[in-house]
Amino acid sequence: MRALITGASGFVGGAVLRRLHLEGVQVRVLARPQADDSNWAGFPNIEVVEGDLRDPASLQRAVSDCRWVLHVAADYRLWVPDPDAMYQANVAGTEALIRAAQEAGVERIVYTSSVAVLGFRADGQPSDEETPSSLTDMIGHYKRSKFLAEERVRALCREEGAPVVIVNPSTPIGPGDRKPTPTGRMIVEAAAGRMPAFIDTGLNVVHVDDVAMGHWLALQQGRVGERYILGGDNLSLQAILTRISGLTGRPSPRLRLPRRLLFPVAWLAESWVRWRGRGVPLVTRDELRMAAHRMYFDSRKAEQELGYTHRPAEEALRDAVAWFSQHQYY
Image (tube, rainbow, N blue to C red; front, side, top):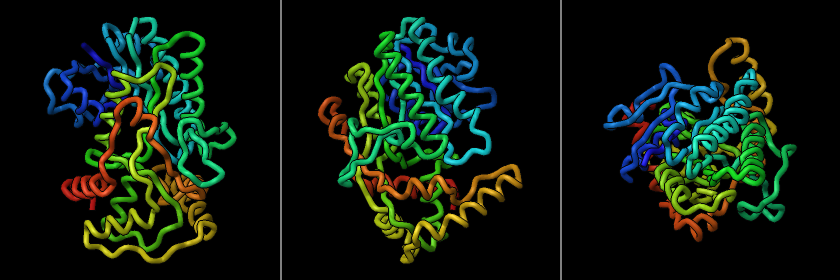
């Protein structure tokens, strides 16, 4: 009972690896040369295959003799100076991996998409799997690349019988966010008391370990060609920051800024990073455009069909803050 995981060195992929290990699955990981092995270094019998989503020969080696494939890897950056590599990994790499898995006779594939590909409801209610969206709705290269990738996956299921179940995590937080992700970076800044103000937006917050369990449930019970939102609690950004303040004792920001005032700041931050040739902007124009919508989502389909559950957002935030503190991020 062997499963291949891509993206095991990342935040969600590491949580999926831990879940499969708990379920007694023999795990193989696809890892690039010199990849951070912290997520699997302490586990026995983890098989590592060196490769890359842009190297078809390595994908064929990776999927060989696997019953399952969990494709968690993605280039997840909300700002990129050169987006070509992102499209190569997220779109072309996804298609290449699924084709390699089909040729190898893999029984089931779970593809990790994102709620970023879903639309927003006109009445302001949380979106679900059927909320329509189009490529023109996608803000930024990350969202566009994930939208195109999911469209290609659905076409492979429909036209070529690819045995893929799609999962759409919302905003995972919790232990193991080493990079950290953009959301993790926000938690660190708030926990350190370095966030003096906020904007009026909202997120669906979910514990990363619940997302990992959702992957396992999708692998066991998901319907091929269907997608399932793996989410948690819908909270305003102000509510998230207030909860972080309660966990850390740091004051919660009280000043709410209009988004339009931050666009010049974002332009300067992006220009500075471009000039330096390294780093990540503190805030980007795409992030501000996305914040125009409260990113609220409904996980009832996964709950009803997969038996998916999630713990309260307070637990997810507590575990995230504790992990960042323990590892001296602030």
